[in-house]
Length: 124
Image 1 (spheres, helix red, strand yellow):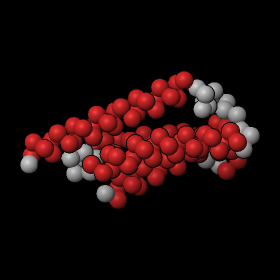
Image 2: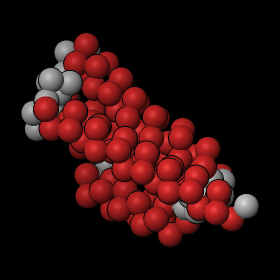
Image 3: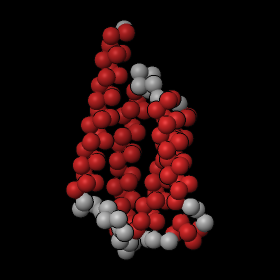
């Protein structure tokens, strides 16, 4: 279980750094972190989570992770905007693409959770 939380924290930290760099360009350069490294780490974490996640054993993770993975970035976007940042890529709270992504993410996690519930009911 600790692996899942570690993966989640690393993904959210990487996402945070990428969003900060998007809203305040040059931030990552200033602290010496290459952008490609963050993307490589994110890809590795996604692969690791796909290999390790067992929905039937980690149902509560399937409830908490989607909520955190949606609410945290939205709050971060709000804070970065409030601090005077402006997205270089056009990503903002008013972006329809952002809200489509939120809906799709929640729908996928809901489907996964329901599938895990059905498998649990069939097993016993």
